[in-house]
Image (cartoon, rainbow, N blue to C red; front, side, top):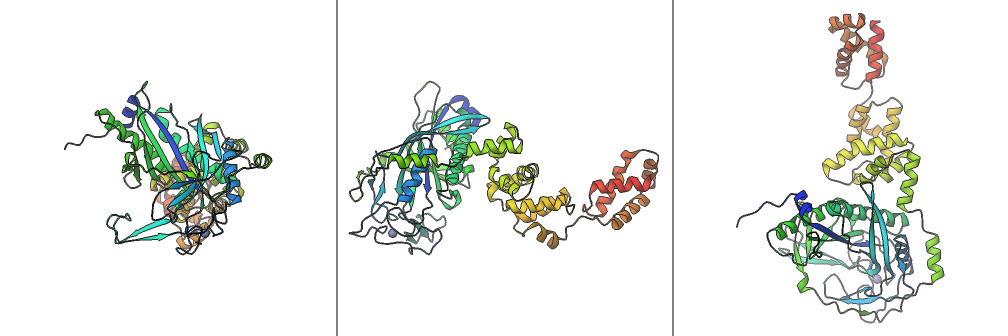
Length: 497
Ligand SMILES: [Zn+2]
């Protein structure tokens, strides 16, 4: 079999138009589960947060969690949805070992929130993403396959099930199909998930941590030639970071283009995204899709949120991220373009917190968008997970402002912070980093440099100030970069005047 190289991304977008759609699951941060009183804390010992209801024991009856319903309505309102005046939960029937009841209580044709939108800014342009529905359901447990190399069931010697997560309230947010975004499809997908995460975080209803699975994303992608009907879509699962959302759409577009260009057909299927290779592989074909035999959940009364209550929730919504960002932009005095790069870097809240810890907007932005963004890109982690906190960045800047660190030394200290060596002052001590500010030691170094370079010294005495660079360089070298270059320059010129 010969392997044909996949097409380049710009070839793909020159020939095809993508349509994307996103399904996002958000675990709510309620104290108790959706239909019972079990606690929801993350990280407890397996199967210690369970009861007859969430274990699906015969005769147990669910009771809906009001806090979860309220959180879902607030998400719906923040996403400009209509809130149903009357709706029902439904049973979704399927067998899976991590689902003890053999059905999941979900919502089917009567979701709580419908027909909204979320505006997302991409390259200075606003893209409106339609929201099809926001509904409430319960999470499943977790299966752990042990003994295999990959953590998958294939090759495993045993499988363990933890039901602590079973029954935690889960909100599913489904977009309408998003056509007409061309080559920007991957970044639109990423910007949407990022904005949605910010919205939900601002509501305080979930910690929306992708790495802990409290926000999980499936991405639908299809391609069509211009003027043709939308193509067959695939659904990519396991997309667990913002970066992966972007990569998953891009790699799926390239894969589908390769198939279509050689006369092949796209199979409607779920695919798995692999963080390591950045590619998707085939999962379950939709042709074998289960018939879930949905029917209204007979053990729960219908859900009929009082309109006055919904109006109250609407009135009490917090300032949403986009409005919040506009306010920050004017407070920080940034252009649209500068603000956009702050948003793209995922640095809004980090800069905000750094300023709150006592730094100017300019300095906070310099560190997060400069040195720290560069490190985040190099190592492929989100900026927020880089290992430096806003407090540490503020401490670092204070040391620079107080003349205890030069910019160059501050970057060395920051390296230590990112490596987890502690706070800036601890690192300065441990690594022996400090500015040589003792003027006696500096004057000595300057005099040594002058003595070692008599011809250069003569030039400077003769008025050639530009020649001072050589002596400054020599002093910086002698002090291993721990002197402030401006001070050294002043000292050199005053000794030779
Ligand atoms: Zn329970």
